[in-house]
Image (cartoon, rainbow, N blue to C red; front, side):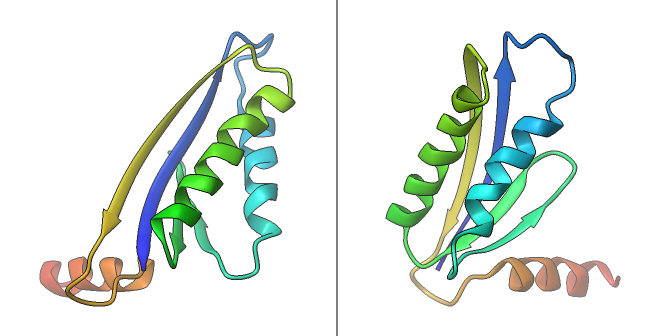
Length: 102
């Protein structure tokens, strides 16, 4: 299992708000049956079985901003991938919460 944080930012749009672009990118994730995701204030966290699946999702999410009219798109991606033990969004959060006493 691999976890990716992605932030797709359209540049060169007529409005300062990017929420319609984020919503369009999220619609791609909603159609995926085996994908877990969590929207945050600064990006979206996605969990998938393989890096190939995450890269495919990132490419489609990036393209979705062009499809909505952006003339330039900046996409930041962070990937956490482990082969020594199971990895999940919930597991990562739980580990930090346990160590911080939350």
